[in-house]
Image (cartoon, rainbow, N blue to C red):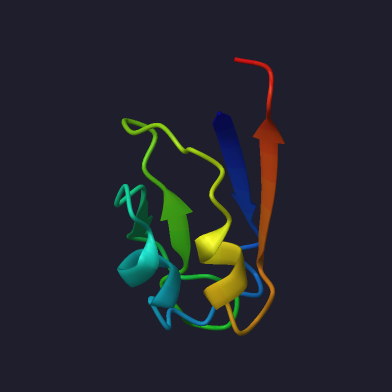
Length: 72
């Protein structure tokens, strides 16, 4: 199963729960601040997302959406 996530960086408060719980370690902190003064989470473009959804479940701000492609 392939997946993709989107992160609403304006909602992210850099709690890093998504980073800690991602089994593939696909999420990193941005080097740029968002409008609220936080370094938001972002997807590491060098790694592939499986669409497991753990990051979205852990995000207290509901800033992550998961998309899955069940056609392998």
